Image 1: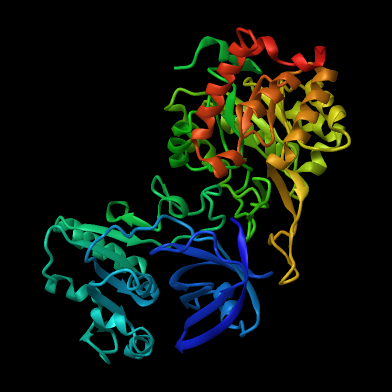
Image 2: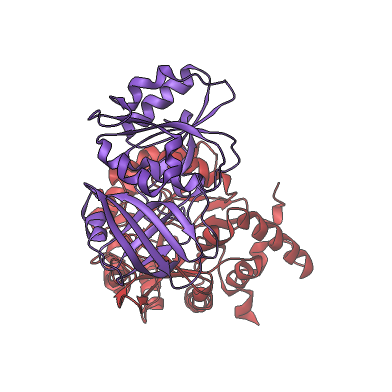
Amino acid sequence: MSYVPSVVVSNERIYGKYYLLTVKTLRRLVRTPQPPQFSMVWVPGVDLIPLSYALYEGSSATFFYKVVGDGTRNLSLKKPGDVVAISEPIGRPFTNVENPVFLVGGSGVASVIHYSRYLKNFSGMWGVKSGALAEALLERFPKLKQLHLVSEDCAVGFCGKLTDFLDRLRLDSDTTVITAGPLEMVRAVCRWTRARGIRGYVVAEAMVKCGIGACGSCTIGNLLLCKDGPAVSCDVF
Amino acid sequence: MFSRNLRTAVAGVVLAHPVMNASGILGYLPEHADTMASWGVSAIVSKTFTKEPRKGYDPPIVVKIGCQSLLNAVGLSNPGLDGVGGFVRSARKYGLPVIVSAGGSRPSDFVDVAVAAEEAGASGVELNLSCPHFEGGGIELGRDPAAVFSVVREVASVIRIPVLAKLGLSDRLVSSSSRALEAGARALTLINTVRAMRIDVYSLKPLLSNVYGGLSGRSIHPVAVWAVYSVYRETSADIVGVGGVFTWEDAAELVVAGARAVQVGTALIYRGPRVVQGIVRGLRSWLRAIGRSSIEEVVGAAQRS
């Protein structure tokens, strides 16, 4: 994987452990990222972190991420002017889909932000633990208001977990569901789509180390997330 | 599908054509075998297995650099001995020879992997004596002819399937090669990646988490040609040539230097799996163009010119 040196423009804590990172690349990427592609963000001397794009415009790339370990914790400490590097976009675009229904949880909403640049219409649900996170992100990305909110603290939208409300959805058999988020949630969504004969895809997260299909660390079944994903059929889950 | 004139044999292992994969890309989980068989290689070579599982280094572990080359320090991540049987059995479904790459720090580590490989039905064992980023068991081992002799002899004395010694660039390559053959290696795989590093000049940090790693791809091809030529000249051994094979010309160059087969690694990343069939087709046309009927006829031909 080749890396493009980039300078941090902003790295804003949105809520709790959730951050919005914007970097300016010092060279243009060779390929424009398309949803739901991701890049490896290099924190020099510390870690390399696969992050889904929220936005990419000109030479500006924005990532929505959650602090989950040392790598993302170090990334969250980066200040404007600090140097990082991002890889060329990884994975296959999955854009030839009309009016998808997104069923996403937590930071899984990042790819929906990216999709919202390309799609006129979409719908679905976004489940969060805290309604405050949803409110903070909706303020910055109003297009996300097309999603129904579900919050575990009952502060916004429906009260409970996203999976509690799946049976309220009325979807045609030709609908395409795209899900992303915690593993338990995406597995439940996939069980639900399979049971109803609806096409389902997971924007999968797995340990990605090399990003070029060599190391095998992102093997899911017979697929490599970095080559065949990140959108993979629910049949794999 | 393959004409007879591409048939070759290395260490007694018969190959339908000379192009195998190089150890290091996938090759340690049973499901990887399905992908590797689809590449069209004539033998499936596993990733290096060690006795104990290894997590490998933290990322960045691979960096694409110029000249269609890669710099890697994966750190021999693998599931250890327990993974050998599953991978070999899965790969054998395809009716291709399966060669297990074995690594370690001590001779007994190599022996344990080699025995597991033989029990699972592997066709051969390639001893990785040359990883440039595996402290205590890599190139430091391979550049010591006495250590090479010791590891090869211990392995060759306990398994019946052929042993291939994979050696890397060092000032004692010919000497290590000779000692490996004396110890019972039936073939040599030349060469491994070449120790190298890159530094990011904005952050002022090395790009790889391990600081240095191994360089592969087109930039090392002439080095591999030299290594194969030099070792074949001294030993006339069965040699598998590896290093920057992207085209049939690259493969042919290694063959006329002295290789009976070649391995493709970095080209699979840059050009995709179809590169293998392209090389095979090109070799067939080349033989026709130079009026030769088989690969075996031209092995080491440059030594005689």
